[in-house]
Image (cartoon, rainbow, N blue to C red; front, side, top):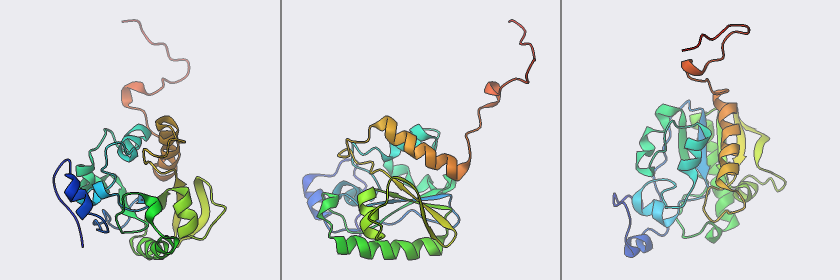
Length: 207
């Protein structure tokens, strides 16, 4: 089943009904980055929006790191491809907590994700959750950051899970890691024209 209620805040019964549901990917070919969450939470499955649960730090981290010029709401996820990124999941089945997934589900999801990346060919795949990445891709020693693995021409980066339960990563540290990926995928940020440095030795007249 595919969930997708447009309610801003799902009722408890809707959350219960969303268990085991799936939500559509936000993908197109030729993206700079495809973000892969571990799997949808019940809140996301009930609304049809990725990383939708209040307290999830994915959308704030995108803004703080420079992927987006403002903080997007989960309901605006359809605008992501125009900005060069897309969203999917390692495992498609919605659960209340990611640790409800069996290792076999993550491993199977890793194979499906690999095929999906080979089809869409983004520059980078970013998996959000180092533990899930280790299981899904059979790499027990993986750490947060760029990986040696490639999928065709696609390079791989492991990001921390943006879940509010992942308190080990503060919002500042999370945004910094997202920023490292953003610079690798898009290049260093360009300052606006009125903040460009003046040529060396040029005098700035007083107002």
